[in-house]
Length: 173
Image 1 (cartoon, rainbow, N blue to C red):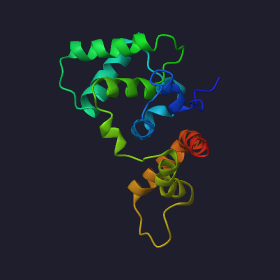
Image 2 (image 1 turned 45 degrees about the vertical axis):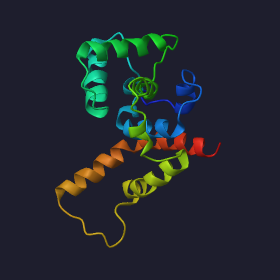
Image 3 (image 1 turned 120 degrees about the vertical axis):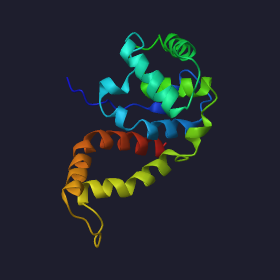
Image 4 (image 1 turned 60 degrees about the horizontal axis):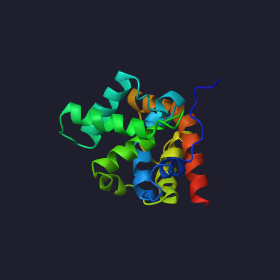
């Protein structure tokens, strides 16, 4: 069994819980969460795992959303989202993040990103070209740090390709 993240229709998953969900906010959360979505395990939230809920509280609620509420308030909100998603055997991180951002009225900060799946794919196009082909002709590069960055990007390409495939399939709908 592969640990690679499966192709997921993120908008459909969010809309299971919020039928009129904001597509641009979903795209923004997806863009924000790209690294976390490269493996199946990381793309899911384990509401029963204290380490994972602490990560959601500290990393997403406090750092990303900028919330300053007491931990007990944030933990209660995370538990409420977990209860709301308890019908799912695979509670996806993007959906949990959307529900939390919505609960705290913070979806607006994700709307500033790409406005559609097609725009998201276009915004990634130069980055993915660099991943496979190297930098554009005439770009001066050199030194070990550049080589490490390029190697890292190439190593991430599998997860990124899966995500791009999902974005492009959404754009074609």
